[in-house]
Amino acid sequence: MSQATSATAPRSKGQAGVDPYSIPLDKIDVADNELFSTDTHWGYFERLRKEAPVHYCAETDVGAYWSVTKYRDIEAVGKDTETYSSARTITLVDPNPEFPLETGFITMDGPKHMAQRKTAQPVVAPRNLALLEPLIRERAKAILESLPVGETFDWVDRVSIELTTAMLATLFDFPYEERRKLTHWSEVATSDPKLQIGIPGLTDAERQSTLLECLQEFTVLWNERKSKPAGDRLDFVTALAQGEATRDLPPLEYLGNLILLIVGGNDTTRNSISGGVLALNEFPAEYQKLRDNPGIIPNMVSEMIRWQTPLAHMRRTATRDAELGGQPIKKGDKLALWYVSGNRDDSVIDRADEFLIDRKNPKQHLSFGWGAHFCVGSRLAEMQLRILWEETMARFRQVEVVAEPVRVHSFFVKGFHELKVQLHPW
Image 1 (cartoon, rainbow, N blue to C red):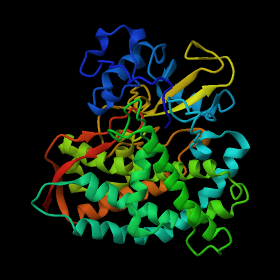
Image 2 (image 1 turned 90 degrees about the vertical axis):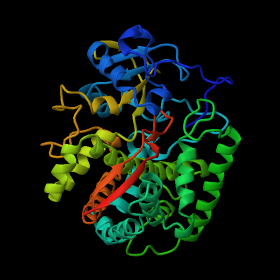
Image 3 (image 1 turned 180 degrees about the horizontal axis):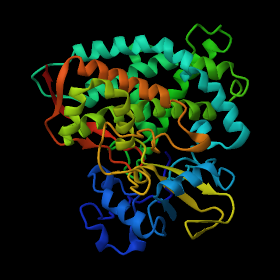
Image 4 (image 1 turned 45 degrees about the vertical axis):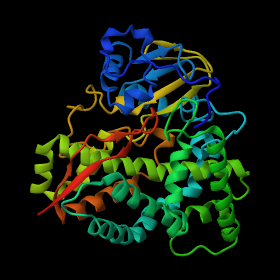
């Protein structure tokens, strides 16, 4: 993410906790951190889907933008990469001209996007995943065996972060003992000090220096691996350093790809792990279904990813005048594809506001995006969640949530800072 153009602190929108039908339709601004940190965004998206599925908001902290809130419209925009470009940036926050960091190949279109994507893809392809699965299971077992039974602890820190960060260290062949740096870099990358997104108290200077520190450390790894033979298990740094389309990347473009892969591997899986625990506690009948039939776990994993929707939106920028949902889109307009809303669209997904682990078509969701930019690591995310829940159910009858979760202050990353739980063995 990058900085807003205004030097002043963002205005308080005052929408959280307010009846969404009491606000004039043209004044609704769902790009509101507080709506997400208080989990009160649902009614706003429900109203937009009903009354203005392609909705224009003229005056906001991120500038004017269109909200695309229904499943089929999001799908249509995702398919039409010629009209709706990813090339500018992936969030509603415009890039900072003083630190023009682009988030890797996800902010590219056409042949350049495909060439760089194909370079990274083998790392998370089925062959590599088959090599990784035993390691993921070994780590999941170790994490779960280390947890205190009968005591309250933070599931986010002890499980969600630990498992995904360990996996990231392996995917990058990054020093394992320093793996928490990857978590920190991910959180810094998705923060924005001026818009008060993400880490509280972070400054612009701290954000930039931290990301340059990330670049410096990964440049050392790049130089080590650019001519080193790849082993049986390919890693992202080796793939980028040796790939024909990526071996001559400028430093900030290399950093952009690193941030894309770090955030993609950290925030999404991590927050689906935490969100899944919360969902099972909020729907106890579903938890009982799981106890009665652990074989349903692969199906449940897809439902958890839909239910959580760990990245609330992605942005597109119109390359030409167009029409969407009966609305006139002008060249240069920015559009937010609200995956979090499309995943609750009951015109496409039956009983969309219910968490159902035996849903008949659980993979029908938008959490991994759509079209050319479909998440490159989707299979890895599903595998990590599946293994974790297989090992969790082998040990514990319930992971009980014992306090209100602390959610991330962001309208981009939909996640958790803290989730206090207690374990109940069989």
